[in-house]
Every structure is written in structure tokens, then in C-alpha cells.
Amino acid sequence: MRFAVVTGLVIAIVAVLLLRVWSLQVLSGEQYRALAEDNRIREIRLHPPRGEILDREGRVLVDNRSVVTLVLRPAELPKDPSARKRELVELADLLGLSYEEIRTRLRLDLPSQFGGEPIVLKEGLRRPLLFYLLEHQQRFPGVSVERAYVRRYRAGSLAAHVLGTVGEVSPGQLKGSRSGALEPGDVVGQSGVEQSYDRQLRGAAGELKVQVDALGRPKGELGNVPAGAGSNLRLSLDADLQATGEEALSETGKPSAFVAMNARTGAVLAMGSYPTFDLELYAKPRTPAEYRALAEDPDAPLLNRADQGGYPTGSSFKPLVATAALEEGLVAPDEIVYDGGSLTVGGVTFQNAGGAVNGSIDMRTALQVSSDVYFYRLGAEADAEGEHGDIQDWARSLGIGRQTGIDLPDEGAGLLPTPAWRDRLYRSEDNPYIDRPWTTGDNVNLSVGQGDLQVTPLQLATAYAAIANGGAVVTPHLGARIEGPGGRTVSRIRPPPRRRLPISDLTRGTVLEGMERAAMEPGGTSYPVFGGFPFAVAGKTGTAERGEGAEDQSWYGAIAPAGEPRIVVVATVEGGGFGVEAAAPVAARILERAFELEREAE
Image (cartoon, rainbow, N blue to C red):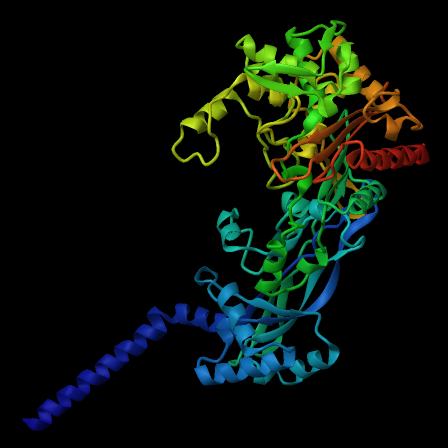
């Protein structure tokens, strides 16, 4: 009986084992065969070289250089904690890092959704280190030496805010990518035109299949799909004009910005912000502390003040108010208004800058001498008639208080104060600073570019361009065309105007004449800078108060040539004081250089 029981158990066990072997070999054979192949073959993603970025003349601003990188694949590290630590400690010593730094990279660069994807520990390996790692590869499972492309900046930090940076794709960008186009470890544009035109610049990734042994050591290639280089991006930017503008900003020694733009098409010829930053900082792996130090710099070098910095404009806002007032019939071009030096509205007295008394003046003279009282009256009359929107509607249509649509990420919208905006905040319980509803005095302040108004240099340049060209609110753009191999044009970038405004020839001529007199005739606010200029300029200074204890904001907006406008230049300097003292000389340098380049091209 005992023998029969033991025999039955043995038969049952053998039967189970046979069924299991049959299941593994027959039912699941193909599945395990595929897994075995996966363990034997490593698929390596081949990153393509990004397309070059060139200026309008075809001069290369950004291209690539090939570097040898050290790549760590966490999934292939030893499973035993002590063996893993020994490898990472030795690796840290070789790279001149600490064990904690490598652990930090593993923790910060590889959140759970990345699934242990490879990370770049070092770029640009020295030859002795490269040969050592290749000779002792068996001691460093999970570590490989690969070739990659990094950005090279031919002109240093020139146009840093415009060109922008690249970096490894973030988890958020991975989630937003379409059809799995991006994978962890891919390099994408993170700011500037690198981000705006990333799809064209990035190219197509390839794939290399490598046979490896049980320890992950490569044994040979099994085939590859080559990566496809990205397309080139030619900008409307002129490198020479850009350098002139940036040099002029740096000489002010103050945070500042400028925009030079084609008044008819919106093509940006130069655009700069100071202080700037070194693009090379983002061309290689850095510690979080290094990135944080730059982001937290009190001078905000990463801020593109040209399209993200919002400021009150002072009198450089007056050409916009003049356009609105003339088109809405608040005043006629030749109508005489008496400027006695001050105007009292609602018990508050508003005075001209410096207490000046300009006497009887028309619109052209008011722009020439920058009469505050003349424009105070326009602001008060617009409000008194209950037509709050006369100035605001026109200013908004000209591009104030809204994004211009430039092909750069994170453009600022600024702020155009209105009665509805102020009254809504005044009633809000969360309002931190609005202590009263809208009054006529707010419209008076707005008429001279003061109060709560916040404008970017790019917005003001767009508004000036619309006045200069007769009403087309252009779409500012930096991209000119996408180019393929050999400079072949793949597509041209010509965004249409965002809207067209009914600015009459009489209004346009009146405003431009007043601005030309302000720059070119004695008594004009910018005559000390432009009086002897080689060609006629229509320009307007701005000196804006920025609150108690803050130095005045200096502005200058120029349209040139005055008789046949082709270019608009706007410059602003934080704490620069009078517009004629700080911003006007910057604009003058840019205009001179722009027309030198134009004559050279002819």
C-alpha cells in the first residue's frame, strides 16, 4: 500500500513537470524566444544633428560639434547594492565627481515615469579616460561611451535670448509629444527659436542594433537606421546690427532692451536684452545649483526684456493717443489748444514736465515739444464723454496689452488699464493694491503713458510700425525661411498682418510730421541726438515714472526714414532717466548701423 502511494506521487510530480516543460516549450516558446532575443540585442537611439541657425546673410550663428559622451543606463547596473555602490564610487573618482553627485543625478534626472532611461554623465571625455573605460568595460556594466552632437555658438552670447537653449526632454514635454516622436534622452529646444522651431531643427532619430552578451557587453552591430539631420533655420536677424545694438545696451550699464523691425513686414532685424547670459552654460550637463544660480540672479539675465519686460512708456505712448484722438474726432490736426503748463481734473492738478508752458499749440507741435497738458486734455475729454474706450480700444488694436504673436515662446502680454479692469480688481477680495475705482485721472495718466500701463518694447515697436505703414498691424517674426541641404528653401516664413486699422493719410501724416519735428527741429525733445543725423527720423522720447524710490524709465521710439518709413527701432533703459539721455542714443546707434548696412548691400 505504501509503495503504491509513493509510486502515485512520483507519477503525479513527473506529470506536472512534463506539463510545465510542454507549456514553456510549446505554448510559450515564442514569447520566451522573443525575450531572449531582447536580452541579446540592445537598441540604441541615434540622435540626429540639429539644423543650423543662420542670420539673414547666411552667416552661421549656431551649429553642432561632435563629442564623446559617457552614458549611464541604470537598468544595467549591478543588482547587488554593494556592487552597485562600488562601481559608482569608482566611476565618480574617474570623472572627478563625488558619489553623492552621481546619486543626485540618478535621483533627479530619472523620475519614475522615465523608467530608468539612460542619462549623460559627462560630455567631451579626455582620451586617457576614454581608453581606460574601453579597456575595462567589464568593470562598468551599464556604462557606455557614445558619440553625440552638442550646440556650438559661433558668435558667443550674441542674440542669446533670441536663439535660446536646448536640453534633454522633460517629463511634461514627453507627455505632450505626438505619436511617440520624443523619447527620454532626446534633446529639444527649451527656449528662443530653438523651441519655436524645434520640430524643423530637431531632425529624425535613428536606431542602432547591437548584439550584447549576458553582461551587456557589445559583441557586434546587427544593423542600423541612420538619423536624419534637422533642417536649417534662416533668421531675419542681421548679426552686425544685432552686435551694434547689444554693444549699445551694455554701455548703458543698466537693464535694457531694444527691437529693430521692418515696418512693413514685421521681420525683426535685431532684438536684444541686457544683461544677457552665456549660451555655452546650457550646452553641456550642469549641476542643478549652477542652473539655479543663473535663474535666481537678481539682475534677471534670463529675462528677455524685449518681449517679456513690461514698463510704463511715458511720452512715447503719445503717438498712439494722437492716432486715436484724430481718428475718433476728439481733436483736429490744426486745432489750437492752449497749454498753460498745468491742468486740473477732479481736484488734482497735472503739470508739464519741468513746469514748461508751451502756449497755443496744435497736434504737430504738441508732439514736437511733448506737451503733457495737450494730451492730458485728450485723456480727460475721452473720459468725460463717457467714451472710455477711445484711447484703450485703439491702443489695444495697435497691439498694447496683448501678445504680438512673435515666434518666441513665453511672450508677455503687458497691461492696458481700463475702467472695467480697475473696477473689477477694486471689488475683488483678493486685490492686493487697487484701492479705488477708475476715475478720469486714470485716463489722464494713460494719455501720457503713465499709471498702471505696462508695455513691452516689442509691443511699442509693433504699434509704431502700424502708424508708419498706414494701419497694418504686422506680426513680428524672427524666422525667415526653412532650408534643406545645400541651402535649398523648403518653406518661407511670411506671417500676414494680424489686423488692419482704418488710419487715414491725414492722421498718419500729422503724427509722423510731429514726430519728425521732435527729432529733427530745434525745440524737439530728441533734437540734441538727431539734429545732425544723416537722414530724417520721426521719433518720440519717453520718460516714465516707475513708483516711489525707483529711477525713471527711459524710452525712445523711432521711425525711419521719416518720409518713407522702412524700419522701426524702440529702445528702453531701466533707471535711465530722460529718454533723450539714455534710450535715444541707443536707437541712434542702431539706426546709423542699419542704414550703413543697407547702403553696403546696394
